[in-house]
Length: 106
Length: 236
Image 1 (cartoon, rainbow over the protein chains, first blue to last red):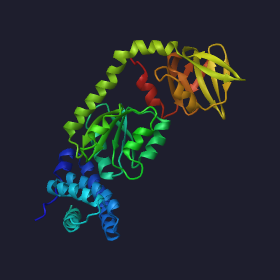
Image 2: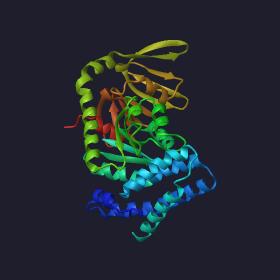
Image 3: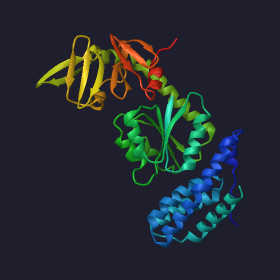
């Protein structure tokens, strides 16, 4: 089962600053789908080096969303992609789908 | 103190900017999603600290550091821990923050940098200021190299393809740019206060609204350069 994202880090950082929290969610909702799409596009076109670049960005979001296991998977997967391997693609996409669902609800 | 934030991820920029707001005495004056725009900005304006993401497509954080001639203090922000050793090869890189950065870690980092910036003049101030006062610059006038002592220069003004260098006794017209001469001048004595003017900071008589008086010269202060001027004044 894939771990669930959360906003604990963002909430801790925001404190009483609800404007920051809201602004951050807006940015996340805008940025994440584009990065997901970019990743899928690179994989479909077998551009593994470029896919590694976007995995690098996405793994930071896993961290922000408190997804430690997913982060570790992304670290390994980024290195694999740089060697042309895409074996973790299915698992990685499931993580992306989970985040996408979560983002829609917040 | 002021800083800029460079990161290609909007979420990362939002977090670093928020963290900057959690510490006292630190203002984010600009955010950039790429290093090239930041370099253009730094060619026009000085900052105390740069929060820099290493891993950016095209022109990376490392390229950025290597490009700057007089880099400010740089704090790297990254998801990779394995770059740390390489990072400290650059003198200007003063810290390394691994994302996601906690407020406690950020504050600790900022206090370390703040102390380093504030202590520097105490340690070397008198000695280096004396050296700056004794220093000089040669300018080319009609194939003659004329020596100007730094402490004789009052104001330098951009005039198209030329600059006017006003000293206490004379004014010289030199075929160069303000940017080029600025690189040759000691930062402790000289300050750019307007797109077209560099002044000898020690020659200020008074400051009124948006102008500085140096001998009989009234020099305008631009809005973007005013904070740096005010920061350097020993205000009562």
